[in-house]
Length: 194
Image (cartoon, rainbow, N blue to C red; front, side, top):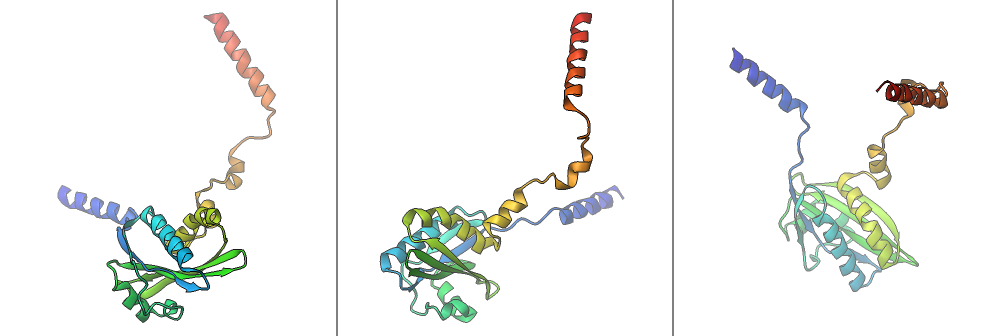
């Protein structure tokens, strides 16, 4: 009987504990150029790889040294084509995209494809100033958004603590100087008694 109760409690606890995401292996294919030069493509792809290396839940990043021939702007919207690209590396997810330069901005489109589900999980487009510093500063948020689906603003809002709902829990009507004077008087009386 006791053993059955323990088993029941263990199962209930396991169901209440949120599941832990398993570590994933990510294939990173070089970005497709939409007017960007080869050096910039290589640098931005490398920066994405670095961010993925530090991303929670990513166990390994397999950066393809050469863009597969099938990978073009049309391929970025087709799961069957992305499956072919993903097979060039080893992983259960593929991150790739395109890079365009327009004046003083870069437009980066990133696609997250699930190899195991054979589907495009999400596709996001980002605009960053066309400077090495701005791209480096903004890439963490770009990679986190494509991997989680949440923008930096949404992630920050999730992490902020708000007092809006708790104002009724506090007494703000009393004058704080009265409380301070009372505490000082109590401390003085205690000191005099000792």
